[in-house]
Image 1 (cartoon, rainbow, N blue to C red):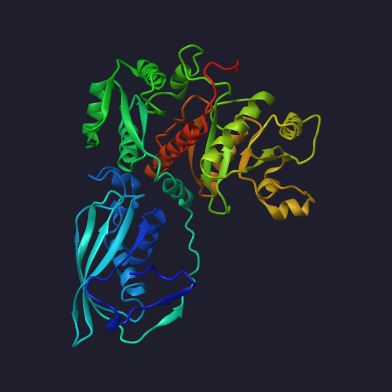
Image 2 (cartoon, rainbow, N blue to C red):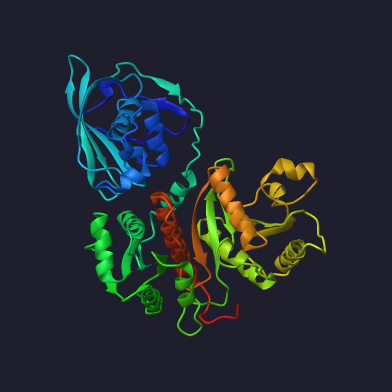
Amino acid sequence: MDAPSDDGYIENRTFDEIQVGDQAQLEKRLTLDDIQLFAILSGDVNPAHVDDDFARSTRFQEVIAHGMWGGALISTVLGTQLPGPGTLYLGQTLQFRAPVNLGDVLRVSVRVTAKDEARHQLTLDCRCENQKGKVVIEGEARVLAPTEKIRRPRTVLPTVRLAERGRLHEILSAADHPAAIPMAVVHPVDEVSLTGAVAAARHGLIVPLLVGPAARIRAAADAAELNIGDFELIDTPHSHAAAERAVALVREGRAEALMKGALHTDELMHEVLKRDSGLRTERCISHVMAFDVPTYPRPLFITDAAINITPGLAHKRDIIQNAFELAHALGNADPRVAILAAVETINPRMPSTLDAAALCKMAERGQIRGGTLDGPLAFDNAISEAAARAKGIDSPVAGRADILVAPDLEAANMLMKQLTYLADATGAGLVIGARVPIVLTSRADEAITRMASCALALLLADHQQRQGLPGKVGGRDE
């Protein structure tokens, strides 16, 4: 049948217009908002659906959709497309074949299998398949089809915004198309590290290469009831050797990204930064966090909160270029960068304001390319147009920043944690500037955060391959 109208109207198909074999469908990605809204409306707070800690102890390792969420999508197709407005539900049978996981994309289809001419009733085969073509729900519906044509303006529903992860799912959506990348997971000897790798692999983001003590990795997988039989396991005696071998896998062309497991960040980065055998490029490395802030209308990147403690001017240039690269990989061709300070005026006694002015001049002279810079800007002027207007700031960046560059690691780290714990923001991050993206995981990361970080790595690796990036190995001193 024809695709549903997108002219702002909703229209049915009457009983007489419908033939056996007619079908309709929709596609919907499962987000955490969907699960939580369904739980709020239904009152079904089964911890398998709403408690991430409990869900990790189940056979599915993460929260899954309520079964009737898929049933509701079948109802959506029946009530809005085939037959459409005026349809009355008479009965429904459903069989639940497989779980629906966070990030899964369901293709929901209905097909007319029988018509009862006397009673204007239809029987329809109903099916939900995930993005891999696996049937997760199937059944049969009986409806009373409308006999009169109905065409009505499509009701515009209010936007419901939960303080959770919407933009992380947008990152997952953006990563649907590039092929999964081989990722060396370094020393994954605990449940958290393995769960993140398995979830990302299941969603088609990565092909894990598990690097570390084989016996400990298998023991952790057994304890967590995770199946790692399909993944290559590269045995090393300890975490230091795992970091060294993982870096070597990149240099050999076998891995296109790294993920930190149960080892210290310094231990992994020590191997990455080795001049002769590491993964250095002409830029310094830096960490970029892609945040979903419920009260901000766009994705917000914050850098650098994990690598460079007190970056100088040259390092800040590279920090900005690294952030540009990630923004470009996500489809933002002209990201707006706010260089943060305590004030929006240049003060010789405040080095952060002098750096901001110099960085903006460097951008004017072509020493920084790929976006629009302004600074110094105080935080309020960077993210609030009203605050910028109140202070008379005329700027293409003020109030609309995509990237916030903090003056040092302490400021960036405090800003990230304030957004996380006071504004209910969530984020996914990467280390950029090495030959390949590096995912730094935390024990506190939820499944969606770990998957979104892997999705960022996939998108960045795909962008770098298409653009011929990153730079040459063995760059300048840091």
